[in-house]
Amino acid sequence: MKVFACAWNPSAPLLASGSGDSTARIWKFSERPCETSVQNQPVNVMVLQHLKESTKEKSKDVTTLDWNGDGTLLATGSYDGQARIWSRDGELNSTLNKHKGPIFSLKWNKKGDYLLSGSVDKTAIVWNTRTGEWKQLFEFHTGPTLDVDWRNNVSFATCSTDKMIHVCKIGEYRPIKTFSGHQDEVNAIKWDPTGSLLASCSDDHTAKIWSLKQDNFLHDLKEHAKEIYTIRWSPTGPGTNSPNQKLVLASASFDSTIKLWDVELGSVIYSLNGHRDPVYSVAFSPNGEYLASGSMDRYIHIWSVKEGKIVKTYTGKGGIFEVNWNKDGDKVAACFSNNIVCVLDFRM
Image (tube, rainbow, N blue to C red; front, side, top):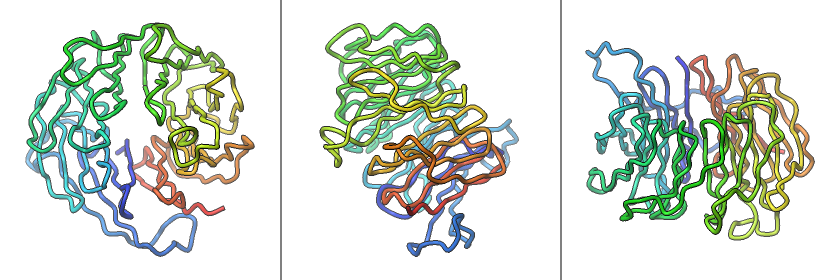
């Protein structure tokens, strides 16, 4: 069974993972450093069952998960179209039932009072997490919604196979902005740390940077040779804990490369060439100094952002779907296609 998603709790040494076996798991780590680069000591694990034992349905993958800001609640999204909210002890708090198709993306807002989900049913839904009821249904896409991302506590962006990006706001019944310009499905969208720039990436081999102040893209980032699966902003620049470091965008592509972009100039700073197969996931360390990448080639590379060079490499036994740093920046979690979640100790 493939492990699709993993996320560190923002306040405790807990790692959540979601898998094709219709479970999510919360792994509890000891605070003491592990002796080897891969943690081998037994960890406590809580299994969050998404199916009743009796159901023999085809795989109901847990496709996406997200912790709320203070780490008290975990939301999971599943192929069965339901979102679920769990306590950090693995108790099911609520089941959010309105989507008519698999959920591919869900995110808590910063305040933690709303959860946003995007589904194959072409919609995005904002849920009131206190009541477990849906607050607003957004039906602006003509194809499956592939990704959603909050801009602030009340507005967000959605993207779809229909090539469109919509910026929406709770209480508004039309998008407050629509961005069109991609020639193929838009796989992911991310707001920069201040919520002023939106990055998107697509099967059309480009990433683009948009601003609410204008209709057309600010930058068309065209150096990749194949589809771009995901993008990430560095946690640096104005409004972050590292205001003196430049804001950088990373894009990960099926062409096996990762590009680091200067977002003011719209040009490549580094092309990171170290993988041999599609790169599915990249993640910046909390201080913005390192970038972890995971690929179908079974390698996790950790790069120096300043130098554009690999500083550490780890090999697993399966392709890697997601990599994630913990809040202290000393551990990287990776989830693999062969039913394994591994945690690497990273100290430079």
